[in-house]
Image 1: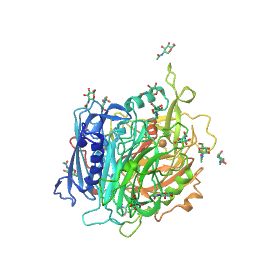
Image 2 (image 1 turned 60 degrees about the horizontal axis):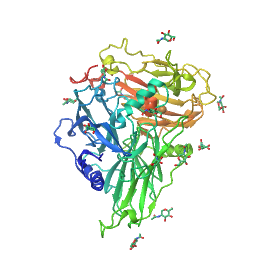
Image 3 (image 1 turned 120 degrees about the vertical axis):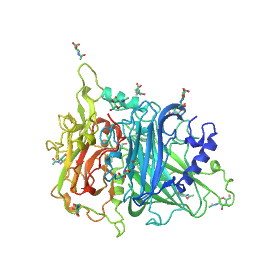
Image 4 (image 1 turned 90 degrees about the vertical axis):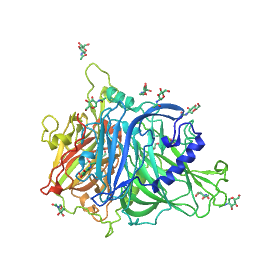
Length: 590
Ligand SMILES: *[C@@H]1O[C@H](CO)[C@@H](O)[C@H](O)[C@H]1NC(C)=O
Ligand SMILES: *[C@@H]1O[C@H](CO)[C@@H](O)[C@H](O)[C@H]1NC(C)=O
Ligand SMILES: *[C@@H]1O[C@H](CO)[C@@H](O)[C@H](O)[C@H]1NC(C)=O
Ligand SMILES: *[C@@H]1O[C@H](CO)[C@@H](O)[C@H](O)[C@H]1NC(C)=O
Ligand SMILES: *[C@@H]1O[C@H](CO)[C@@H](O)[C@H](O)[C@H]1NC(C)=O
Ligand SMILES: *[C@@H]1O[C@H](CO)[C@@H](O)[C@H](O)[C@H]1NC(C)=O
Ligand SMILES: *[C@@H]1O[C@H](CO)[C@@H](O)[C@H](O)[C@H]1NC(C)=O
Ligand SMILES: *[C@@H]1O[C@H](CO)[C@@H](O)[C@H](O)[C@H]1NC(C)=O
Ligand SMILES: *[C@@H]1O[C@H](CO)[C@@H](O)[C@H](O)[C@H]1NC(C)=O
Ligand SMILES: *[C@@H]1O[C@H](CO)[C@@H](O)[C@H](O)[C@H]1NC(C)=O
Ligand SMILES: *[C@@H]1O[C@H](CO)[C@@H](O)[C@H](O)[C@H]1NC(C)=O
Ligand SMILES: *[C@@H]1O[C@H](CO)[C@@H](O)[C@H](O)[C@H]1NC(C)=O
Ligand SMILES: [Cu+2]
């Protein structure tokens, strides 16, 4: 029998597990881990991540999954802005492992960023690595996940960054804070699935379910007992920390009969706005306030998520649900939730791009004196990247399952990125790039075409380990353009090491003469993951003030596997505070 977490105990009945899971969800935030005094102002918080296998049952099938400390989803990291985190990762499994602290800026601590073969070699079986970084200038919700192959399917958990001591939220203090992590579940082994796909050249098998805090919910066979329940008190306000840790699917999320007030995205405060539905892509996090009705209604409310899907391929078209239940102050144990009517939310259609567009345009930085939007006003370097799918030819003497007996691939500016066998950051730091990478990542597509029109006849990608080099403190404008090659699709692009400002977006081909006139340089959303609209483009700006090697990739894991990724090298500046320090002694070797 699987369990919500190791703490819930494998032999307990489901009722007990669920009650305790909900209890943990509500209480754990109050508990910060043991502290140590530190010179850098904040506290130092220690965590230990033992990577180990755990048998977990979902959808009536038990499988052995890679976990942190036997927990699924993994443990919560809680820190305050300004704190240092020391997370000791010990690998007890047969797989190579790395952990990425998704969205943490890693100022001058690139060695702790985590993507395998980009900033570090993997932590091999039996090895240990201490991730050492400080959370600077960020507050809100982020998450951590494995960053090698598809291990993040089960190796993920929330990062909660509380404001500094005595600092308050720029919105009403919630009564409780509850992370809600969306995941994606396969009955089969996910490493086998991606390896099979990369061998045959076809698309990987679809997932069997989505999960909410690890639970698929009653719309799946055999899962009624595996349902996440959120118990609320009338009149109280709850901060839901939404995290999309699914591998390949953007998700719509809604709670029946409740409006949600969005207050934060990717650990940056936004101008609050109300909505019935949230759109959240893999790699994004969104904090929303849910105000419970003032009187306990005689109903149970469904919380549901299902995909926003635009691409040419099939997708997992299922729905994860959980329950929002009201506690009655008079008789807390009484109301039989199962006897109450169950109200369901209405979610947008799977391809409701109009909703997606409206939603993303509503996200604006809070941009107050205390939390200003520091949008680069001038641009030193402009880049124009096409992002999309393509093909690789099938190896001789093999049949392949992609279109035209080829292998599915993906690229940026037609370069399908190949991970090296040693980490880019080490090669860069020790000036040993020869044979590892070249610095000629194209700033523009190799040739112009109607990116969103009739696809080209030759849709083969080129392959390479190419990076783009930026002098320290360069202001960058990057336009990312979806292509129609194989099919238009929304791609959630994630940049490591920086937040960027989403200054513009549109449909069709980006027009460099007309479109920049409409850029928002005042209060654009500041984030680490943004969707390139299906059949459109998005423009972002960032200041390259963090020396190191920074991965940028589609957060649809299947596209990353196919090569929709690249890396930036940000050179050291002149001052010592503008240089990347040498690697820690325990940095894993290849
Ligand atoms: C998982 O279950 C298998 C088969 O019952 C068992 O051999 C194995 O020891 C279990 N693994 C763990 C980590 O409990
Ligand atoms: C963590 O990094 C800081 C800054 O580089 C360093 O001063 C400190 O000694 C490191 N701590 C450990 C335990 O490695
Ligand atoms: C993926 O699906 C195909 C077709 O149904 C099946 O033959 C194959 O075994 C599946 N792969 C895995 C790893 O389950
Ligand atoms: C659920 O189980 C029923 C009966 O066993 C089966 O017919 C149906 O296909 C299953 N549905 C899914 C989504 O697996
Ligand atoms: C839920 O919303 C529906 C549709 O708006 C409405 O008819 C119903 O009265 C609401 N129920 C409760 C308990 O809020
Ligand atoms: C819920 O039902 C109880 C008893 O049936 C009733 O007293 C109460 O007024 C109802 N509450 C609402 C909000 O309808
Ligand atoms: C997805 O499932 C819904 C029902 O849940 C159905 O209405 C819709 O047509 C399906 N979409 C696709 C693309 O299969
Ligand atoms: C959404 O999908 C339906 C088919 O399920 C199709 O009829 C419709 O045109 C699509 N809408 C958009 C905006 O692509
Ligand atoms: C490919 O097939 C040809 C003809 O069947 C054979 O001569 C050749 O050795 C094969 N090559 C490889 C790499 O298997
Ligand atoms: C690009 O293709 C689209 C769709 O076919 C078409 O509407 C548009 O006019 C084309 N643009 C140019 C510049 O040719
Ligand atoms: C970096 O660039 C920004 C914006 O162009 C500028 O304000 C700042 O002074 C620069 N900082 C350094 C250390 O060069
Ligand atoms: C683990 O990583 C090392 C270093 O890159 C590599 O040599 C080895 O083949 C990898 N092992 C597995 C099981 O992938
Ligand atoms: Cu993508």
